[in-house]
Image 1: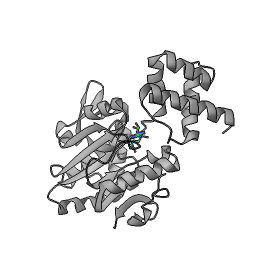
Image 2: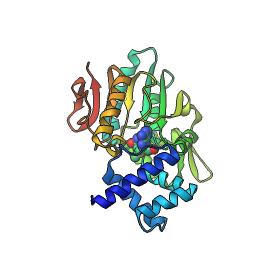
Image 3: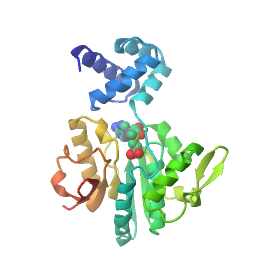
Length: 271
Ligand SMILES: C[S@@+](CC[C@H](N)C(=O)[O-])C[C@H]1O[C@@H](n2cnc3c(N)ncnc32)[C@H](O)[C@@H]1O
């Protein structure tokens, strides 16, 4: 990245941090740059320096920039091969009288509902509490509402079947006013809360942690920090699920995990 762009981006990150308390210093600069440049264009700011002036003067512009810097792309049963593997392993939770699963960086919720459906189909929905966290309050509000747009049904239904779904997706949701609403029972035993993986502490210990498609946005130091937090929060013999483009490369604790299948980002903590 050219030095002047790096400097301007650094200035923008500092400005966003001082105005909103949201710290993007540990995010990969190249990915951040793409999103910032697209905001420069949308906001007609001319340059990153122009965007710095705009966010200082306009609170709504700051909110839009923050939203653009945090990508919320997600899906139900995203990466069906991953969920087929999780489905095989999840009966392990039945060995505990009660258990806890953390979906970190859960975005707008489909990942949470994927686990809730798997737990329901394994007969564990009542015995396993799910903690669903994200940095973004807006994303969490959507997650809590437990609904999705009508046009997403064919994709979600396909993913559910590919992931070994035992029933029909429509068994878990109903149609209302142009969207699908998950059954309230599926959201029972789910606790939602704001949590920043880069700055907040461990808040519980878990038999299963899903932290998918978020560490890839952090620089190596940020990834190392998050992996230490996940390691501290995961019980011995617990499971850690990452995204398909993520790995334990920057984890100081990678020796403490065993990958269940080569190429599959599901790990078991072995010590
Ligand atoms: C691409 S989405 C991934 C969603 C979901 N985990 C999945 O795999 O479908 C990334 C999510 O990470 C969240 N995020 C970004 N930085 C975070 C941080 N420091 N702590 C917690 N969540 C963060 C964003 O708000 C966004 O919802």
